[in-house]
Image 1 (cartoon, rainbow, N blue to C red):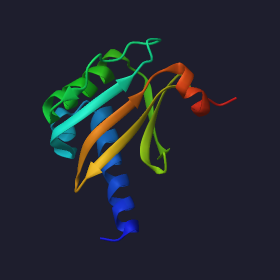
Image 2: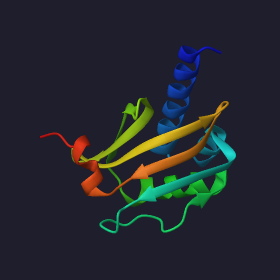
Image 3: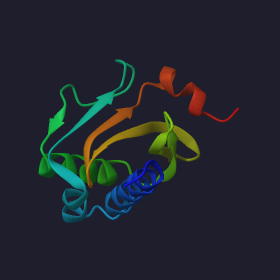
Length: 126
């Protein structure tokens, strides 16, 4: 698969993750995550974030499904993050998180979520 094919496949994986997350579909999330997937959040001590990486597809899936229930009304926008497919989470039009993904083969291996408001400034509309 060429570079363009990998980019398209990565965008499709991120889109499938977004849809499953919006639907709080744990099985759908598990289906796009590698069995040993991890998720890491950076709140910078300014906003709540998991203190330790969440490990394992089922645990990562349940973590994101719980976040969807805990913070209703989040809009997930697909966008480039560091030149790769990612997501921007907004609440009432304000960016509250940016997610980057590491994709290995046909599964998401790692999710990085930046929640630190200082680091989100470039993602905030003026």
